[in-house]
Length: 569
Image 1: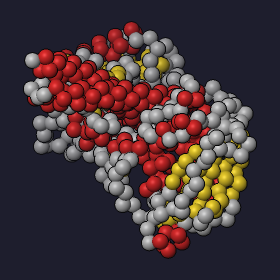
Image 2: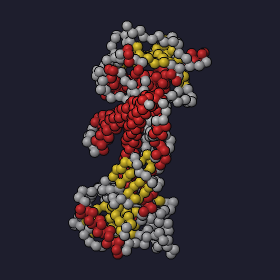
Image 3: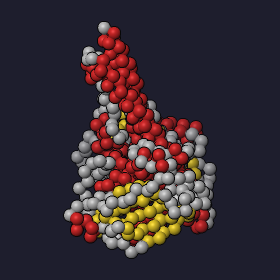
Image 4: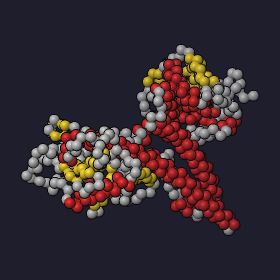
């Protein structure tokens, strides 16, 4: 009885620990999915702003030349706005190049209740604009024949209130308001006159035209990074909804029954205050977050509650191991998020500075762009490292090509040079003539980039990182030495494992997967990776040995000559 009670007690304790571990894993995974959803929503609203700005500029830009004052006593009529659109000889009509056709043009003098409209007389209003021919005899239900008196008053009142209460506004503000519970999309611009009046010119887009703009952004393959979508369209990865400022839905990529791990962002008031809501598809969670959303193991543990005490102890040990894995994964996701946000914040800062024109000389602009390029290289390397780590242990069927290791290592070091300089490190390269290697695409880049990043991250400012390529025992050996604190002999086997870091790492940020990627790539090509004693006794010496193409052909398989282990005295 005592043994049974003890067994049940241990199993119950394991059940509690399991729930805690599962909640912790799910919290971390859900946080990552919300971050991805937030990025998707932000990227969508940025692309949407660019598209709306280009379309409204083309439609109304001709009557507003940078805020200049209108001096001619002849005020353009609303119907004349169609002539400012580019002429298309194929249809013999005017139509925009960057956006949909406006449904109706209108104009009025601010402070008056006189509003004139311009009606499209083209046989197919969706194809282009004409105002010089009579309206067709056959009139479709979708053709607008001008505004009613109630619509004129509503447009006049809505825009007048917007102009007088809005303060500073953009050149072509977009207003999304409701008339009789129906959303209406208006865009306008102001044209002051030399005699003190202000003309308001604008256009209205149909609901279908606005939906077309919102859908086009969703189908833009540049909406999300290729490393994130992996060849899929954004619509296959993200579920998205756009609503107006009142919460009325204007566009949905698809009907969504449950918004769970979503995030939102709102466009400025000059773009209608649209609210963008996005979430990663639930079925895509396993491809976005390493391991996916954890599943509950309660049924298994409840069944385990009925077995003997020995099995309960085994289950308890397994649960504690899962708790350790959850802690490691939480630390990994936190460190990766921090490392990704840092270059993104730097890039956004420099780009915002360029956009606002704060740099006045070409040297300053070149310096800023160089920093953006450096942070882009850094961000690309971080993403490539995570993607390569996610494929660890999986079979790799990519074709192998002959690679000149000497020239390729020199090229990689040159590419890494800006990142090393930003961390106060110098690099030297000593390359000998070596036989070619048979490698999969980007294999050498994964090895050298991760070792260089490790060297400059943990080395002191002002250090010199030495890179050497030579032939030893018929194998091509790549050696990278730093001047950091070194790695204790007891840690030299552990640091190659995922999520593991040496005792000398200190408070330096790191995910603990860089060296794991190096070891996995080297092993996949029949090579080895280890840590040796540097000749001068300072820092750490990382060594990767890969079999040459000739050695592989002669042996018939990817094998490396035995490498003597360093003697630890």
